[in-house]
Image (tube, rainbow, N blue to C red; front, side):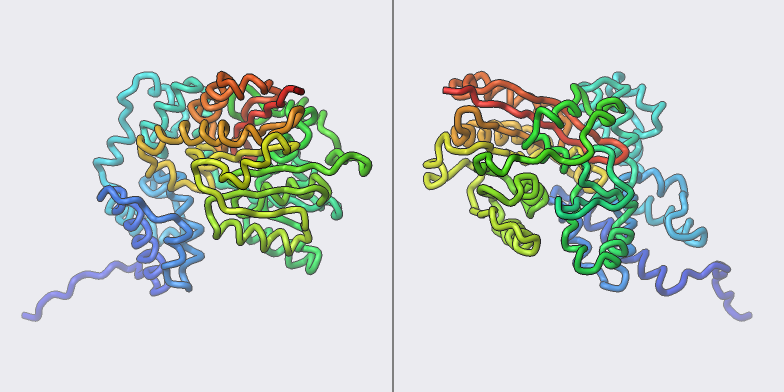
Length: 432
């Protein structure tokens, strides 16, 4: 009697789908394997760069979606095709242990049990839900979760010399809103050489820059808790950005933690490429990217310098009381941008969260002395965690130097339908 051949499934995944799934599984295991072993997980961009080039795009589109809503896998929601559903269920269960899923489903803190009505508990670590409910109450915490599970849109900022095309953003008169990067790519390709006048930047981040420059106009959008501003506040915004008089003195700004360019470039555009912007960051790589982008955009007012996390070096400290504005975009927990960096919510440690408020306070205390009398000290984060958004500011204002400043604007913006989430405090140094 001949041996019986094993029965095969009538649905055979194509070689491409199998390879795409195996690449996804490799990336998934890299993230959560590091987490289980106590190692720092790789950054998503670094992880994607190591994948097979043919399937990198598919994984880069799908993995963040599953990190935002891992319950998708267990609910059997179609991600690629109906044929792959069983494979996805198997993949999800292997990479996401039943014990971890059970931990996410149970809520030790009775204050967060009300979040069950939002259907979000499996998509966020329980300790994160506890923290949000403690800061903002269950209702607001549930609304935050609902927003941060969504796929993010893409926003583009166009420079003053260009009339924004539709669809325009509601909050920033320079913003254009797109559904995804592919849509942006096609639009910029159609614009040809003019496409260089457009910069990818979240609409909330744009409003942050406009608030730094014109707090009397855009400061009204910032509320006492996270979320979208009221419709009447949006309707009252001007049709375009204010303009500084050509007769006014050119301004000097210092931007701390400048990053790779979004905020400094917006600041330069708002200032009309006049004056001077000193952009500081701890990363030489980010500063090189900023210099390249400034050069391509034609901004000549930006100078860069690498600094340490501890505070300004002596050469910069010599600029004491000389800047019209100092903008500190502080390192933070990033809770307001979890739609774009969904891996962060799974891998943050208590030690890291505990360290951040001290780092933020040191930045405020270290750079505030560079603001001249009558100038502005702007402190911003991309989080709605009160320990980072409010506590460092209150602690600074209680110091001898801090008593020379008065709060002009303080609050939260987003996350919402067309923006990430941010906090800001605009402090004005009292005239001498």
